[in-house]
Length: 255
Image 1 (cartoon, rainbow, N blue to C red):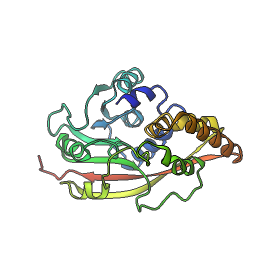
Image 2: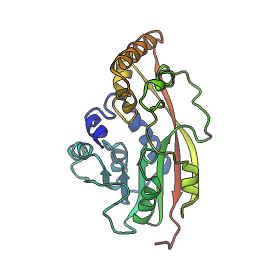
Image 3: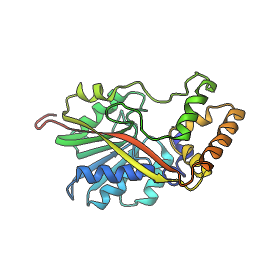
Image 4: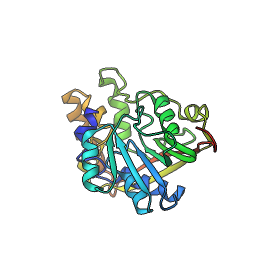
């Protein structure tokens, strides 16, 4: 969690990337006021903010102490805790709704995290997860100078790929679980980016920043300069990215 402690102060503050996805997700799932919701791997509280706005009672957990410190500052009424997603300190059948934004694909043991989420969900509860990429597996249809540079600079990573995260196939993870009504839909966001430096700072403010930090210093500086040059040549550049929203339900009467 050292990386996320290090980026917590700027996480989702440079461009409201996770916040925009959370707005869309909560609009779609339309939770009822008064339900008890768990924001799992909450970060700075993108989902927490939206759920509070719907009148939900929110408990937020994250493995990063700094993320939770800042979340508590921003949402003092929320029960916020530093917890490992694979070992949740809650009784079984506690929550009506569980949301998890952009985390199940980087958790070391996603199967254990999903099992814990199912355990603490009430029978009939809804579970919602977002992960990068489109639901049909197709690449994003928009040109993006940073994505191209990631591909080009992978060979300079120590492992030759720079990949961070687990190898889970979300479709298998959810469909092989006890959950029912499993569905996936593609979400999209579009965020105007004022300049290349903003895009660079944003790229270093969340999980993919580990890719840039993992480059040799000279290659990192070279990549930085090339990104600034490319964005300068793209007036009114807009960051467009997609994600998959996975939704499912715990069967009624299950424990």
